[in-house]
Length: 260
Figure 1 (cartoon, rainbow, N blue to C red):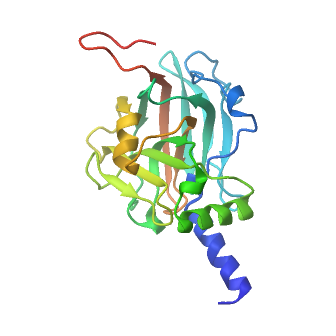
Figure 2: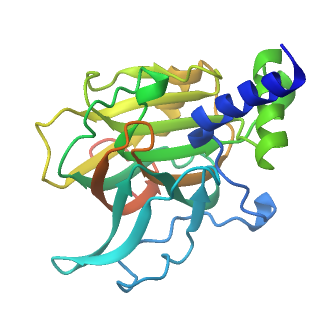
């Protein structure tokens, strides 16, 4: 394969796996916040929520629109995707062993027609919540390190050591673990699936420590970012979704409420 063809093949892989490449937040880990800024404490409008940054996957992809809106007296994020893919990301520096419980709410009114997260050419979702982790890059298999190097060369961004995605899927049963086709460092967990819960706010609580161990078979490093994404670029669909506040909590002692 010639140099031009090799470059084209690598670029295609990067675009297909772009949702794993959360952007650098441009600050040392010691300066990253230890909590997620809420949506509900902000005012509806055109500006991005404080603490959150645009997450552009590729200049070749149309961005999804995100806005703070009033939903029955509460400020939430409204996401609207039209054959598009991008997200919002919030940098963090958080120990998942101390704050293992991830809580959020989301609402989806329709599924992405024809989407199938097990198929790379149909890998869309009406709602995703993404958590990235740091770690020792030298421990990665050679194939993953080469893929990471290609992503960095072509996009200027460093992929996280590991990425865990919680998705609303079409077909796969809840709790399904889906592997990315191009790197072992991205795993998807289906937390909602199908049409049964459409049109209603769904509260979700996940233990990211346990989920990471299940997905990657090792102990996690620090959490470096959390993000949201609604994407329809592979199927060319139009969809919208809502996201409520996102937060990490300590594990609750037996028979007691969650602690901040």
